[in-house]
Image (cartoon, rainbow, N blue to C red; front, top):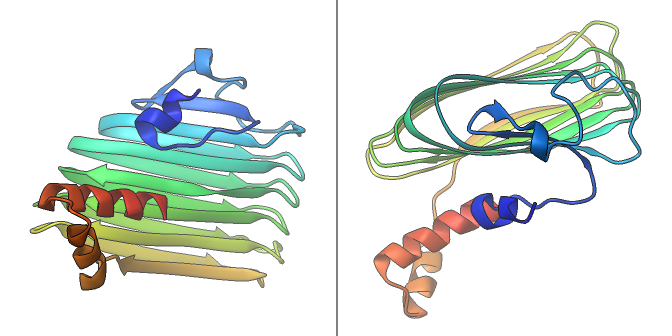
Length: 222
């Protein structure tokens, strides 16, 4: 699936795959059905969600297998008003769900990421990156939930945004922790290129538009 890298900057690796394009499940690109992951696989499970979305969209990540690694790669462009809800539930003892959600918003975006731990010693570690285009509106919420009698969990729902002129961004982070975690982090920040970075790129002969492109690529890939 080299086109994942060529078109969406998503690296593929040996894994069982569940692939969505433009919000639609693609069985021809997937090695697993779009269903709860209740079977332990020797390889990691790679959930890939790419393309362009509009309207209401939902991605469910449900893990019930023990000792299973799940990696989420999301790279989505929003040109029309869109809602995206990602619901993550980890009930597999010692299972880990991690990944990066990249959202390129040129319109109106409502995004909600909810991550729930339903068993002890589970991990959910999700980094959310938002590129907020000129005059766009992004409402970003995240909720980490660790249920009662689920100690030793690692939870991190992080947000970082890069905003162009006139962009509006609302962060709404939250946590509900009912058991003592191994770690429980939650962050939201704005990324702004430094003057030194811009000066260096201009000194290398890049035009203003090329500098903007290079900085966006750095933000995506860092």
